[in-house]
Image (cartoon, rainbow, N blue to C red; front, side):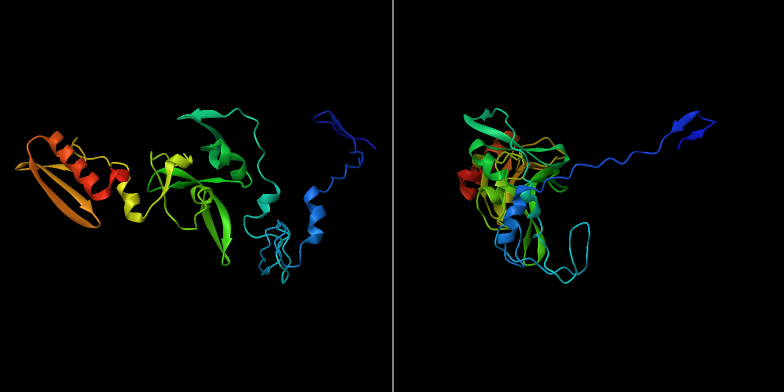
Length: 247
């Protein structure tokens, strides 16, 4: 049977039925028979929740336990390990971990294999105007986001980790340190100021004032005529009040 169109002078033939090759089941399905009913199929040993409604795309059946916890399904399909040569930063070999949105995270080579068992995403923080690497986890029935820094340092969820050099995608161990909220504010970047003066120095009618804020209290350090001298006084006060770690 031939179908033709006189206007376009094209001839269309009926498509032939071709048997498509059957896909082979992935190897992880062989171990699913050993997983108890109601537990996550990634093998983590945690119980899953009951599906409130059926979802054919996710494979959920109403009233039945879901197959995976949130974020655990990606463990079955970890990102490929790239055979790229490592590079050195400050004498230590490092590797790049791919993130979403075309971003990459820098880690030490010894931590590369451990972190590559998950898929990481790049989250934009409008306050710091920078990206952070994180993955999705499931805690007490709620979706949470676990930072790569907390995973790398084996810290509990919610612990604040500071980047020493302000590069939020630099996850080398030498660049990370657990801090409090106050200590994290101490290491924030210097904001754009109206006057080009050292940090802690501001203009007044009596010359230049010097002050520092510590633990929610403002401490006045005096007045100077030279702004550079005021900057040195501020640095000395930071070293005395906050220690060498945050000076």
